[in-house]
Picture 1 (cartoon, helix red, strand yellow):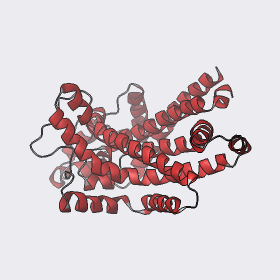
Picture 2 (cartoon, helix red, strand yellow):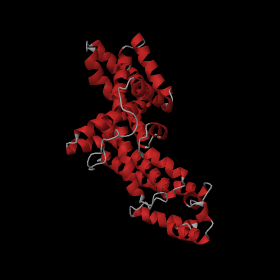
Picture 3 (tube, rainbow, N blue to C red):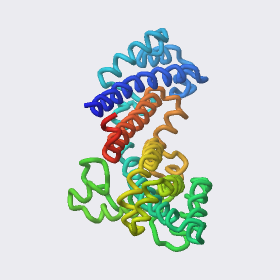
Picture 4 (spheres, helix red, strand yellow):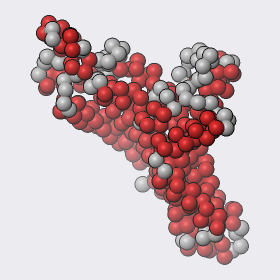
Length: 339
């Protein structure tokens, strides 16, 4: 019951977070130089006052700021994020178009980062201060330190241009049509519709950008896993279990990993949230049509409804991920469920 109350509190906090983010971004969008009109209309149209006034009336830019805010919050409560000034489509339609590409890439990236990060962290903790430990720690530091845009250019140059082991930019190769739209995730849609050619091609395009994005989070997970395990392995109950003759593998996975997993889950959750926010530079280098590209174009064109829509999407991502992480905390540690 207490754990259920905790989840309800997190959901209420998510609503307050969305309200705060919507308000904060709305205020910031009105403080930046420009009014959205000059970013959208041509110089010739700007010279025509009738066109300018019509545009302002259409997008509500002629109303007082407090009225604009009230109308936007009313629409937001009804699930209406407004229309993109740049494209003329609703913001929901634009997010539905770009978000699947980002989610598909982020999901594969976090899976790679989690698998190798936890694996390297466990090995480093078991082989503490050995050459293997030093090597894995060097890899994790490199992953955290290397700029993602530089790493993206490097892997494209080596594995696509020089070796030809992986395809280039975009979600699909030239001549390959997207599978029938069901979820927007090309790999899953190709599997569901039996379009295996598109499925394999889209999966091959995911590999290089996923490796680039996974490198940073993998380094953080490796370091966190190692530090958390070393701290857990130094506790009294672990020393007692070791003194009773328990071997290293059962000791690690049956006793140490459970208590060491909480900080690792936190890093994974934060990393996944960052990835879902869209990595603008990496998406640009790989010509990946994701949220990062949409956000960049929206900011460049002062597309205020789209900017607020992207900000709310990122806030929802973090909020939902935090709730899932809290649930996993309770699954791993019974003390949290009873608190």
